Structure formats: C-alpha cells, structure tokens
Length: 181
Image (cartoon, rainbow, N blue to C red; front, side, top):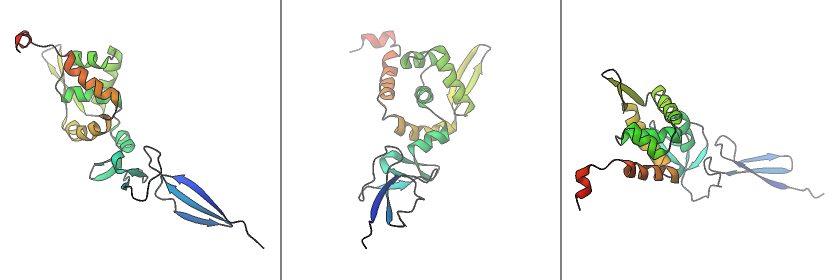
C-alpha cells in the first residue's frame, strides 16, 4: 500500500494562518509573502507583523506609526491621505501658496478644492480667514506628526518626486534674484 503524500504550498501574508497543516494525505505549507509587494519573504529577510492588519511586510515597506509597526498600506488607510492629498499637504508644509501648488501639481480647480476639502475634514489642514476675502491654509499639529511618515511612503513615487521639483521651478523669482550670479 503506497500512499500518495502531497505537499501543497499556500501563499499568504496573514500571520494568523498556521505555517503547516496536515489534512489527510496532504501537507499544506504556508509561504509567507509581503502584503505590500506580494513577494515571498526569504528566511533571512527582516520582516514585521503589522499592528493594524496582522499581515507580514518587509521592513522597507513599513514604518513606526502610533508607537507600533504598520505596513504602508495600513498607514495610508488610517490617515486617509491619498497621493493627491499628499501633494497638497507637502506644498503647504513647504509653505507654498495655493496658486503655486495648483500649477506645479497640474490640478484643476475642482481637483485642488476636493483635496483641500478632504485635508480640512481629516483635520490635517485648517483654513484661517484674514479680513473678509483672504484665506490661508495652514497645516495642523497632527499634520506635522503624520507628514514625515507619509513623506517616506510617497517620496518613492516618481510623480511625487517630480511634483516637489516642480514646486521650486514654478515659484516666482524676485526681480533682484534674477541679477545675482
């Protein structure tokens, strides 16, 4: 009597799944994968278990957030800041005005206003009124706490890096600065 013993690999990023399970004449072996990049985790790779979702992630796809390791996807989900909102927040943190932000990001008025509205609702930006018609956007204390982590996540994106470069190109240069060597 020869039994056909099979080994079946199951790919999962969930840390709650048992590593091996025996079912009849089949051995299920779980191969750990990173939740963010979907690549299998090597035995020598440095990994974390996300405090938010409980899944595995490479350390380069995770950050310390709220005193615990979180994967990049959970940080984005917790803060509710997408790439458009990050571009607006980044420009405000670097103290650019709305006109320069819209031009550098190539946002329409509607796109910019939606990103601004979402940032105000998430309490990362506040709008100060000066006189009757003048308004200025300012990052809140919460934005100053969250910004470094979001910057680490989004600076890996080529279009965000190009946006930050465009910010400094779009800014108007004072007349005196044009004549300096």
